[in-house]
Length: 321
Image 1 (cartoon, rainbow, N blue to C red):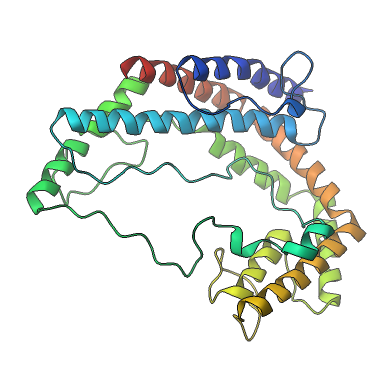
Image 2 (image 1 turned 90 degrees about the vertical axis):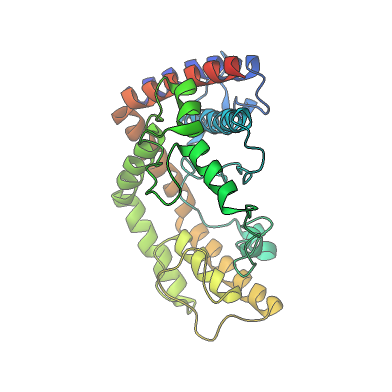
């Protein structure tokens, strides 16, 4: 009941968050899809992990919008100081901070796409070269930029970890948003860590994972810990190093694309078949929902304090721009 109340309180502020974002002129939707919402507009908790998952994602989207405002305020400050050439501040990459642990693919997907190894990093494969770095026209130009950005001389040890206060335009933009030149700690990180620890201790889940792993071993695969481990193993069919290294590696790889995809699909089909025969996905869903609700209850105060800080930061940032 306590966990349900926590999610309800998160849901109650979801509409406020959406209104603040809309009123501030932020692009994109903040509210969850209609299937995640109850009749009174709050996020429902009666559809697997969608309730707590959607509530946390709302907060995370607010965080991303605040980061975008931070960049806009920082660049405005740089221009006001006469700095017109500087590295483009890229948008934060998609995050999986509140995404449930990976599950086995459905059989129909496994039969055609495997794990989607070659499409998991849009626009870039592990073997691709990194984009060219920005280059300043002179050492003096770089010095002026660094000092304007951080208030520190080039080469000085950076204190910018998102928490430690900074000077320069970075500190000024944070002061506008948060009233201080440092950002508040994200409560989502603690929620995720607590949920993962609880999930890893779930006895029913561990029993199912053991049966699933033994099923794959009977199909001549090595001992794999969970579906995430299986997807990691499949990466080595394509690349000499996977995106998430560690654990068993197939001997003889990597292979040409067609052969690698054939092997990836074969493993994904075996994974899906074993998951189906042991109801692994259902047990994973229940274990994650239980763990996430417990984490929300434990970190309720931090979650709402962080949410309040994000809402206030959005208001201040839009007023400043």
